[in-house]
Length: 537
Image 1 (cartoon, one colour):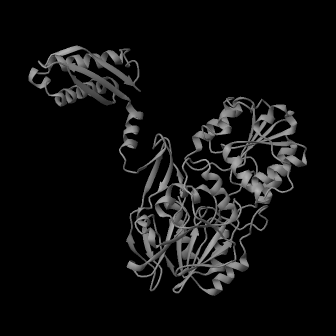
Image 2 (image 1 turned 120 degrees about the horizontal axis):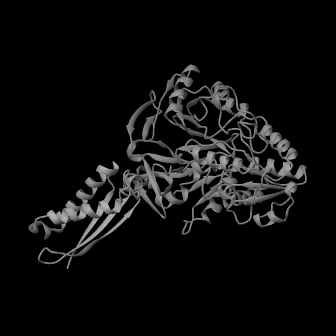
Image 3 (image 1 turned 90 degrees about the vertical axis):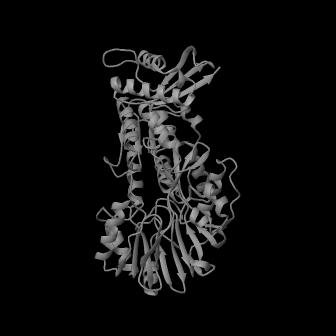
């Protein structure tokens, strides 16, 4: 959920720019029913008149995914390269009621001014076209915000991270480097995207039957590599998944897939011979509604795989998705389908720098201040230690909401601003402290019992209570009926409740709820949620 604010000027007249506006993916285990997370931008929403622009470094979802949701509350112009701008526009088509975002296309190397800031987009290698670092100049110094990057002299598609360009920035004098920390715990340098392309070409050429490749939909270089590998051995590429369709449409429009045969829709798959097709699929992270999961379960209307076919996971599993991905892999293997992952061959490389590449970046830029970014606490701490080892005089470990003064004077933390998460729950967005999420967790843990009781004006119970239960087991260890235990608990409470208390609906509700929970705890060890409604008749 990348969203970094840079401010300049005295507090009451401070002007701001926002770098990226990304979303995160929620874990179903901890937040049932919540798919997406957005950053809480309430601090800058209250100062939106002083927000001069939103600068997009590249078009990955963790950098643009919250833009459609957040823009109406900010209404600042958005600056992005043609690919990122086109992908943002394409993404809006899938969001009913999406706002008309004020968009300005930028060209790397052409400096532009936003109030006290002068901005340069600086091309870098990454796993999506037109990725950029930002050189942010003010009268108090130059800040380089790297965005996501790596060093790849032969990236297969897209720009390179130029030593000459970053050395020139270092020669100019860099006040602060705000740098990607994702792979700081990995030694050496990342392999090249071109090496992955060669591996995919070899595996596809050697495959006797159908081949399916799943990868991140935004990785246009990987999509092109699959297309060229298929073309080289006379196979047709079938694209399956809306996210993949969207990216391919934008990439085709901007000539990133020039020279390749047109890809085919899913409906063409069934008419192609087994050795004449490559299916390009979404779902590399085990998403249950994506193409790969449905194909693995043999539930897709157009695509089927058989024993002897091959599935290539040209991706890495994002932490938290391991169980979902492993379930799909095991399902495929059980069906006799060959599975290739990055544990078997070089079918994926990261778009982020390892320590060897980071060392070169620090050698080129020679900043006075280092601020680790883009990583979990472990990565940020390791990056801070690494930066000090590179001789950086000042290193600041900042977390979400940390306000750091870079100049004048020594860099230091001066405040902690309101920061947090918002959750996309269906079609609405709720704050992190909304009670619906923890209540849902409780329901998932121990279910719910609902009871309706009718009482007349004399305090007599009318008829039998109506009882419904969800999420509870049917029988106890001894084989007793859970439903009968609930009924007995209700009867016991109602039989022993004094007549005076029966006219107090709240007292009846509390007593019945307590009785049910106590009875179930004794035989089950859990207390479900209880909803008791008293009807006065």
